[in-house]
Length: 324
Image 1: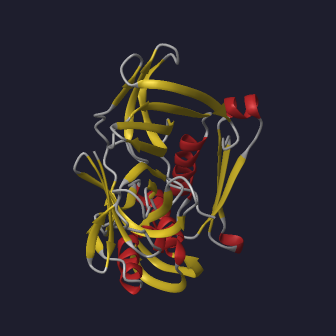
Image 2: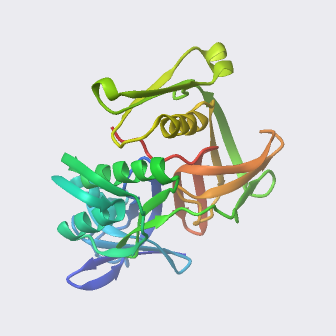
């Protein structure tokens, strides 16, 4: 069921594995695996020792789920040895640089920076929005990409995602997802924990565009939410030229998305390898009193022998990661 290979001297060598944890989050660039394996000079087990920089391929039931490189290793006197590996997107947070882009789209910025740092490209969709000027000063590649995609979404309402697959990095548009996966009481739902919060709730939005005497301001509020929770204002200085109507429309869009009580649901279920961060699933539970779709914010899959358990953190909204 579990197959883990390390690539050493151009050869693939299989490890005798005890367990694998495969995880990812919408707030983190790279997915990772943590592998416990047997390394001993005694008995019939292999003597393959995983080392920093080795390539890694992980398969479950013959399907490749992960490809990346080892960053951390550990080994004790007793018990299994261990390593942590990340996929290609780890290099998007390990590299910083400064750029000035003129009349470029987010996908053009993505292609240029990937090329500069040797990240092989897979599928890259057109993002359409052209930025007149885009300046990045000592930022990670990941932050550059997220800022570009966030601004693209504000302008045209299209969402994109970046992921690594089989040794390639991809930038693709997120279409409306057809939910194929269901977690349900008595079928595959093992445990859950539900929380609500207004820590990130916005009840008022103020946007400004232009400069000095030509400044245009648009302020919109959710009066019922403000009355209930108090005024919590999002302020933003908009760089592009917008008229009053356009600015108000954008403010209303931001308010609509952020004037909500955050609801997070943590689920433990029988494993499905397709349940990864950014995907959608349906949850049916009488105990939770829910029968609806959610988006996966964070996932952690544990594989041991023939068993596969997944822990998920899911939300009702599908937002881009926040970048400071």
